[in-house]
Length: 364
Image (tube, rainbow, N blue to C red; front, side, top):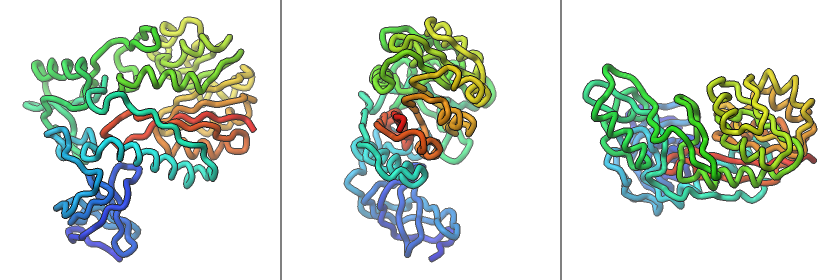
């Protein structure tokens, strides 16, 4: 079957795809429908048609699925910041778990996965400590889905109170012209009994409500020992905890400002400011780590890093990932050397389709 743009179809939504859209079938053709829910019966208009799939937008929900709810935000449907506000939280967790398993099986070729451990966010709303805000004359808020239009947002349902206060201040005195600005509700992180320096522009996990459980989960998976290497350490969110568990810790960060913050936040570690793909092939095996902890950006590891991991002799690897597809690819590269012993899903960004996974790999 083919579907022409503008054509209207009556569809039953079967599941949720990795990008967040609902998936339906029309005579064998996969149709992706934003803001739909499993079990929905919808009338949808085709917006894009390809030989193997189509995209469509909801014209009318004919019969809602069991997980559909009234979105707890008046901007939903216009603001592009949250795409799963129309789903209850239990369905969101189920969908993230299914997306993770599918990627690891299909892309990673991992036939026998350990049970997926779920760590839910303590708060489903009011949790976010940072966000990227867009502005133009007369509007301060967030981009709409699929366009550069700025949706004027007075209150954001997922911002924590301090970040909402920062948005309030920006709305009272907006910048001139048009652009974007990172919004953050704090200049330091209080986590694990420590105060972590947070320089402007440095990356940190957005879910303030989950920081304590996030850190404790990753450190528990790391274990303890004599020597640990951390790659892509950022500001040192995990590094100080590693210092308490390992006699020698080397932490690598390619971005100089973040590496300087890591040195302040984890004074007991050796901090190296160099790109992982340059350092790891040359140095990783020499450091003889028992553990390698890594938290790469969304594209995952450079091939040189995964090759160095496979050859370094580590007993275990703990991999923190914000993208199941690239995690699955990297695990496939390491499959001859390591097996996946534990797998944890962190509910890092409720109300969105984003999936955060932590895998503990053990040497065969």
